[in-house]
Image 1 (cartoon, rainbow, N blue to C red):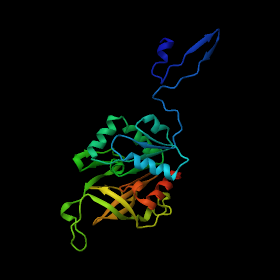
Image 2: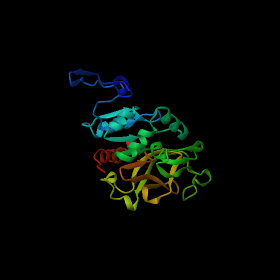
Image 3: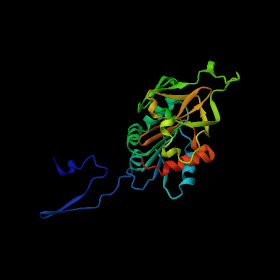
Length: 252
């Protein structure tokens, strides 16, 4: 194979100059798609999240950290930690994630980096959703269920609305009370929700928190380097900002 062909497929070919028996390698120039900047926190942009409020909240609680909203898989690979938000319908979110070529980089980050999923960013981690009969990323075994309209009544018989929208208490599961992301957050603190679907994990050991509407549903999961929540910490005042601060300083 010729020397020229040997360098094909790299981000940018190296130019090699031979002088007698020695050779000099000229400085490699980065490809326009190769990110070289330091990224402390990457917020995954697949076109379906409330990215501005998430990034602004992170910048507020961590002004010395670099926060980048990005749809570049290389940025996600290079970032120290990942925030995976989302809003909208599950089929649309999965379609757009795949259209931008982000599936593999998100799954890899969920396995290897401090990772925070928010709202649909939680639901997409599971195998299947009733919303549009859509397949998820399958990172966790379990499904995403819709609140059953015929069961949405509180203790005194008042009809509850779907979507579940507004403030609700979040209770920390027994196995996750000591989790760093619950640090300085009172058990039963109120967080802000906007959703019609909730996750139902097969493995109860990953449940990090729950809420009631009217029955108990999983509102947070925790496993190794990954934490994901159904509520919106970026919209949840003091408790939400505390959770984001905990995430920024988390060393799983």
